[in-house]
Length: 247
Ligand code: ADP
Image (cartoon, rainbow, N blue to C red; front, top):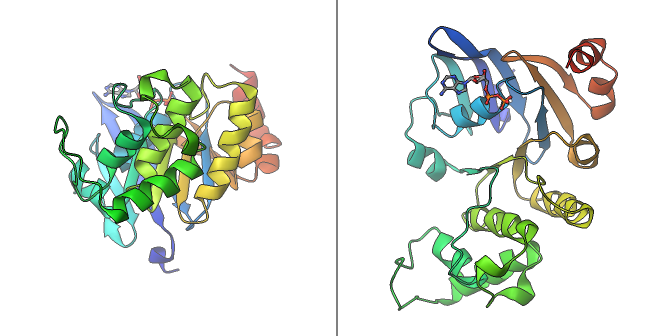
């Protein structure tokens, strides 16, 4: 098997904190343009996996191959540059800047300097901002300060701030936490649009939402993969039922 056919190949990944293996010999593979959801009880190691992929945490052993490159030896900014975008659970947008400006400062070429009055608005940046704003349902709110957006809209804006950097892999930690039902539905729609061009790796607890978005689900337990496959497959897996009923 040619491992480089996968967008991401995680193999034998292990990290120990003071002898405790938070991630323990973990392997999984992402196809280009799939939505993979990682589920599992609290403490299963889900967040640590995303921390390892984006370089926030260093692996004790194992490998993370992304588009043919080994990420475990790279620094965080190099991993971003290689095409990995990570969104944390709480929205972190620049509240005093408008929606437009938040997207503009996230544009990868460094066209703007924070604090500068002279935002350089060339045609390519304008077009990219407008395209992303439409994707994240904020095209009519470009001049709105981000601080006035709803919680859900801030989450979308932060996804947009990643999208404008065109990552091949987008990692999202509980993207619908705190959202209304309508916002959850729109987020599912948004993720479907995003996977026309990007692969998405999501940590999620809301099983309804997982069912709506996941191409495949990876269930983690005690740092390992407990089960993997379609939502129906993992829901009916006796090992998964046992772990969830035990909590
Ligand atoms: P999940 O996201 O599935 O809830 P985490 O990845 O946050 O799980 O954590 C897995 C385990 O690793 C937990 O027991 C947690 O306490 C531990 N852990 C995570 N990060 C660290 C760290 N930096 N130092 C020590 N222990 C950690």
